[in-house]
Length: 375
Image (cartoon, rainbow, N blue to C red; front, side, top):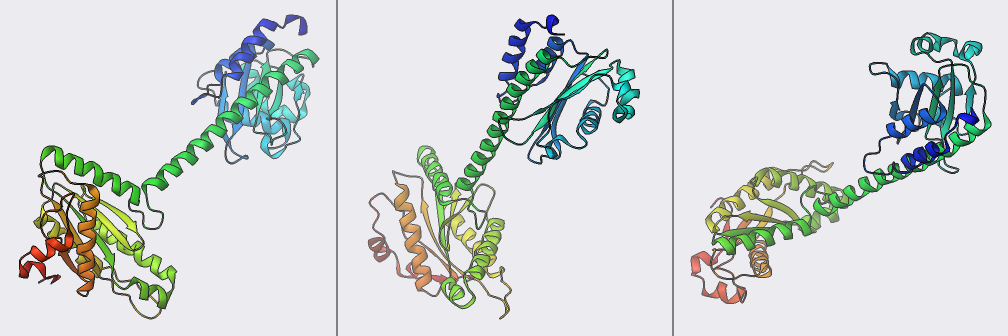
């Protein structure tokens, strides 16, 4: 066979094998080139993934409609006595004539149907790492072991192994990157938006409100008495409280709203195109949702209530995001100071120079007093 080998073809196959570390690697051109280089009838590759005992990819040049994956695995098991990934000591297996190898008797009907008599299988291994698959070449006639062909096959398979390892690494890095991106978008404990994400939503909605002149509101909420829950029942129960509350709040807000964890036991809700009256209505929904999220403990249920503060941009003039947040935060503080389980609205329209104390003093008496929920 050695005199029949085209070393120019070897370079072409090597180039194909080295180019497999793209986003979607395609082994078939390299397998076809390897088949032509060695004068084979068919080639196949079986590659493992996260589970080394199960194939992640089976490709071949077997005829269309033939059960290529099953047959490739069958040849691999016959050659090595089991899945290749379970045999890190696996070496090249050169079967000169299937008709003289008793262990391959079960494969003869398929081999005769396809028209090949010999095969060579070699493990895919990147350096000293665990075997990650196998490459096989099938020959139309009995084929004696050829040292030059075996050496060339080793070189090509090592290139394939490196390319496959690079692709697998890229997959792992992509998954890790997506997980990191998810962590930036979703609070790990509660599943709602992170502080960063809800701030980004508020910034975008405020810019749109100022550009188009429509209202924008935000709600700041705080869990009443969570510190005493943590002190009495432990922080694990406190975490359950936050998760249950977040679930109830998420069900109470509208699809266009953004609910995020502001920090600790505080949540921020961004309400696009919502005036002060609409914000008050949604605040009451959040209060009712909190009262429905009782948490069972060994000492009886924990009944939750919220303190909610709201602030509204009326759609006129310039306003910085910090001023709107400060107004909602101070309104929430006022609701908590009044006993909790209620909503208070920031008086007046916040501006970049908004003074909450002066605004509260200037507000009419009845409106300045926090009202219990439901009244």
